[in-house]
Length: 393
Ligand SMILES: Cc1cc2nc3c(=O)[nH]c(=O)nc-3n(C[C@H](O)[C@H](O)[C@H](O)COP(=O)(O)OP(=O)(O)OC[C@H]3O[C@@H](n4cnc5c(N)ncnc54)[C@H](O)[C@@H]3O)c2cc1C
Image (cartoon, rainbow, N blue to C red; front, side):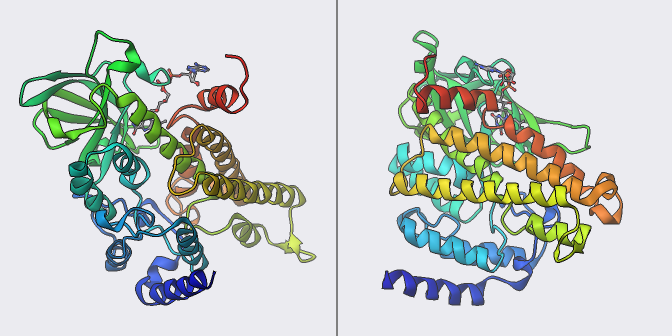
């Protein structure tokens, strides 16, 4: 216990000196979000410094072993670090599919060579990862995927395509599910492979949305060389790795229910926008809905914490991640609806100063996709019914 008190003190002092004041302000636009990677352009020296400082301590991946660049913290210390970051409203230094998805999979299933090659670069935010799972005819039914990996002696050759690759045009490396055996059962012929997206034969085509944004791309593979040492886990054993990775993805998406780190709390925004009457938020219906949301947020936070404690020492949440993904994304959709209500007609302003360039309605629209990405709500409910509640299939 005393150790933790000392550790908290140490973290506080370190943050005092190493978290730039600009990084303690709410995120107001996409540009405030740091994804790292070769193509990323930092918005400010403070943003770059914050990533350097935090990753230098290994605290972008606090519980990963120090041998791979992580912080080497135990769960209790990682919780203290999280609390101290929240206390000063620190922005997340790095948004990373490397940290939330492929990193944990490499840690559990990857060879020593893969761990040493990829994990330290993930911690430092040097490489931006893209996820190549979905195909035009393999979304919810992911095991039907057809992108084909063929053995060419010294290396493999990959052909096929992926769709809905988030930020595929900005990715440096891809973790990709491929069919490596066409003869066996469909779940048994899948592998998870890694390759640099600058390899000849890889191309992307952005998918433009009605908002004008292009958050994802189609990705094409035309005789792409994949090195033999870049298979995560066993060849043809990729389904197990893919499912493990998905539990981490779903946990990460479920956390959206707690709100984005570094953003202003909804109740504070509401007080400012709607005003106060008799010491309370002026609109009683909004007051009730915000109170309910904040209670549900607290319940989600505590349940996540309990589940993580139960999962001891970095183990996966397993099927519970489906429950958290479902509840968290529904909660985030409610939060975004409420934010729109709080701002009234101003919320609909797509480009005016009051809405900071349409950030509000765009974030609201984006939240609708939360219950599709990483597996739809229907699929999560199926998993909860079957694996957590034990209902007949
Ligand atoms: C914002 C966003 C980002 C994404 N990023 C990525 C990415 O980076 N990489 C990647 O690989 N993929 C990504 N995806 C794709 C995502 O994983 C798929 O969209 C998702 O798995 C659903 O697949 P689908 O679109 O093919 O829909 P389908 O599987 O065709 O489903 C259509 C509808 O049928 C329902 N349905 C299907 N099967 C069942 C069933 N058994 N029981 C009940 N209902 C069912 C679904 O719930 C859904 O409502 C992203 C998607 C979005 C929206």
